[in-house]
Image (cartoon, rainbow, N blue to C red; front, side, top):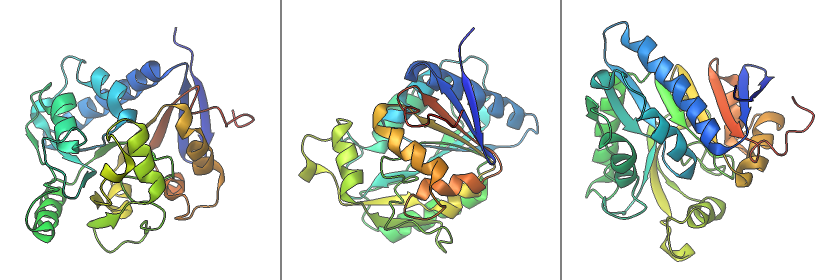
Length: 259
């Protein structure tokens, strides 16, 4: 039987596994269960997907589970760099094609056109589609600076009037993208991105948060223990009624005494 440690912090639930593969598989199983439950009402299932190193094990496992109602799923993603071509190695559109939409027969998937000629129009159309679908599930991560999507501390707004916006990425966020191997040098990491805002994420009924790796240990601890503020945007997750964090031993390394 797989060993797992369960921790609760208010409404926030944590599951700690031995390694990132086990944590990703657990997140995938719970996501699969949510998809099956949502499919019972016969309606379209709206799901928002994240990208990056933290999501790989979960997506590999999720797309390998047989019998899921992908034909009812309409997908979205959280963010995309401004000015990045869809074929660029770091493009989130490319990432999600390779790790998701080319692997399962999804009903629809709406991509964020980060290099479109009219960014305002791109955002307006995306928000219109998002609101028309009303996503019920979001699969996401937490950044090393505590960001949700690309809502870095200086850009995060818990009462943001916008559903989506263009943000300037801070140096810690850009450094993380470099460290994960998406770019060859820091100067290549774009300075701006389009992102769904924090209220948009928090409106989604169920959040499944995959956070593996030693580099995320500090942001996990901050999420649980710091006052709820935009200094660590992920602290807002403690106010959501249905959110589970899936950690490995490395990302849980600074949680001694909380179990």
